[in-house]
Image 1 (cartoon, helix red, strand yellow):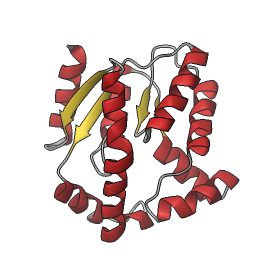
Image 2: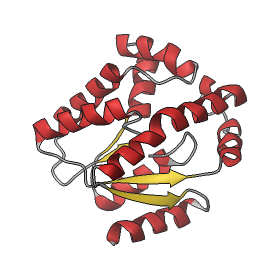
Image 3: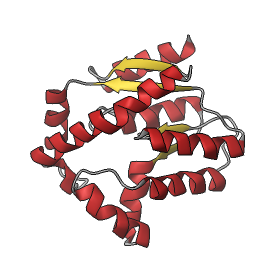
Length: 183
């Protein structure tokens, strides 16, 4: 977990490869659905373009389908999900049905100005309309309002929360994550 631009996708992918487990990125799933022009993609597009969260029932449905299509035998990584306490509660229900509880949460922290710099400085290869400066700042505010409370919710439930510094090289951040997970 972490704000937009914190490196969740990069670090999640590296960690999934290291642990040899599947990684489920709702952001990638939603962008793929949007690119394919599916009903889900059309529903999600207006929310994503405005920097808003996609409705819970849509995202939870994606996660349930992904878990059903790829049974996680040795674990899994959720990349950037859940984003709200309601999604976390929905995820708990989905995981309870599959007897696949969460072990912990990795929370990447990056200062806001660095997030804005990273997101507005992308090379354009992703063609993301949600990376304009005003939209980026809105996305960060939505994260603060909606997603940071999820981390506190998990901590109150007794789930292990690993707070990681999202600054430094990709390799430095990954190395720190692996050290923390090994504890």
